[in-house]
Length: 479
Image (cartoon, rainbow, N blue to C red; front, side, top):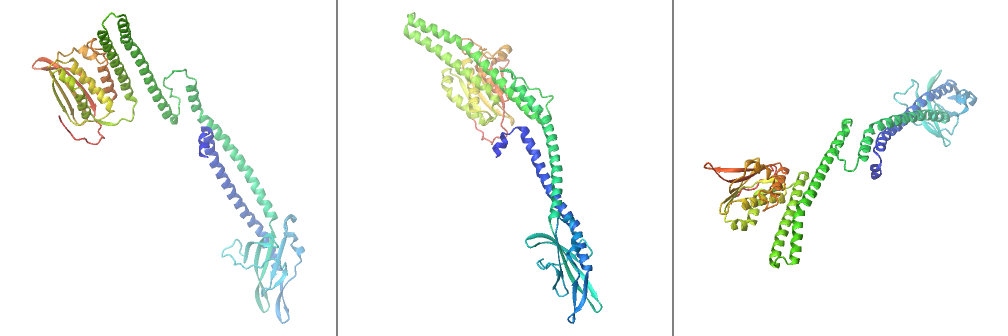
């Protein structure tokens, strides 16, 4: 049942949500009104029963009989006809004497055994109750009628019962009259609700039509000026989704453009080298060496393109773990230790625990590219110092090498894709990947010339990333 309700349209759900409670309330109100009408009818017709009982009580006489006083009722049934309304109801009566004996009336009428109410609607000693006479439901009234004679007094019991045809007819009339009025009210509510729901859901239908009729690839934000307040969160979420899709589409197009442009040259070179080797222009060993170099450069370029595309997607990743940057830096330095030894560098690493909200692969790619560039473009036999420090809010990674440094224009240009410092070595994507990762993690990256004793001593690559302040504390270590 719940699944069927969820499949209904919003308009149908609103109509059901409003009309069903209204129907229940109207039903309860109708039932209560019907019960009140029945009580009012009983009160009105009970007055007739009381009048009948009093009329009978006025005809009672006490006469001596066999040495004692006996109650007599000189009443014919025809005297009750004026109290029968439109001949649609029947009256029955019963008179009990001073000793509880039946004096007159219908003996089959059940004798009253109840008690008088403490505070009834009439001043007389009368009680009203429901009973049956020969299997027919009746409404009865009992009147305790005081009688007096010359030498004493007593109490006679007068019972009058009436069939329920007239009361039931009146109750049905009241019920039918109430039902059609309440039905008309329900129809009026339904019409008002239908119009109100139609007007309230118009912005939703308009928004749906605008999105459905958009051209393919149109990811412009949805206009939200005319949207009601309740729809603003939906429109904002839709626009946010459009922006993310637009960003992903731009990244995809850029990746395809860059990949097709950058891979075309090494593939063309590889094709020429294979053709030259097949013609025998070069010795086989020399040709295979050239092919191997070309394949290695193409593989490196492809891996860097994939890393750049993956780095651009970090901004849309909302579930990012906390990683200790110091552990990643140590692991990267260990991986590149052979290259450090090959360049005879004076290497030093100092890293304290730095919990950063990032994927491990992103920190590894960032650290590897920076350290690899510092090794490759530094001075052989020079210094290579790596420090990772925190100030309570940020972690700063500084990689310092010995060299000639860079001009201001070069330091800015090298962060752009395919802007290599030396076209013969590298594809120019390393620093672009580093910047993309840093920006996606909310940090900053810069290249600064290091001056010592008034002379240019080398280059510092500095990356600052915000610490994950909510992360559990990680013990500090140095190496």
